[in-house]
Image 1: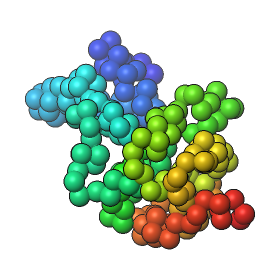
Image 2: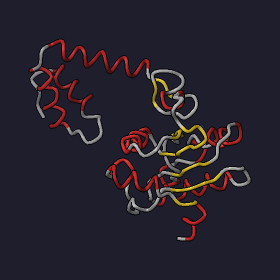
Image 3: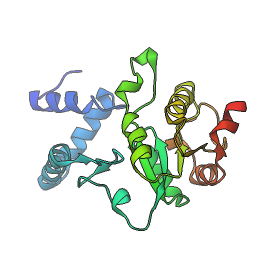
Length: 205
């Protein structure tokens, strides 16, 4: 693709690094920005810089936060004895949107996937085990996507929690096998949380 400006080309190259954004889409977005008032682009740039330099991860659950402890973990209205284990921040948002869950979360930051070079040591698993050991946790809900990697991760954590005085459960299979949590509709996801099963029963299915 030929560009009439090196500045334009550089901006398109950077924008095309985003997932699902090819160079044609990137060019369309950049040209859209150029057609907007200058302050709109400056505000966007400032917001991105502020996001990158000031964003934090909750020291308890690893959710994205503006402070050291996220709003969910610091809320007095949540059930602090229940932890829902999810793959990433998008899953927290998906479950929160159902308004069917009022406990805490633990964001793993991925799933065990040897093919991709992701082992247990790369995920926030040990901090979850430490929370169960050191806090008065009654139940841990596995809410990973029903893929091979998700099931492997669930089972690994289940074994790590064996012997601890905590109930383990998994979301009901209203979520189809192979589906990612973030793409499930709110009603189905909400029902899956509410109708969760003991993890031991899920192993027998």
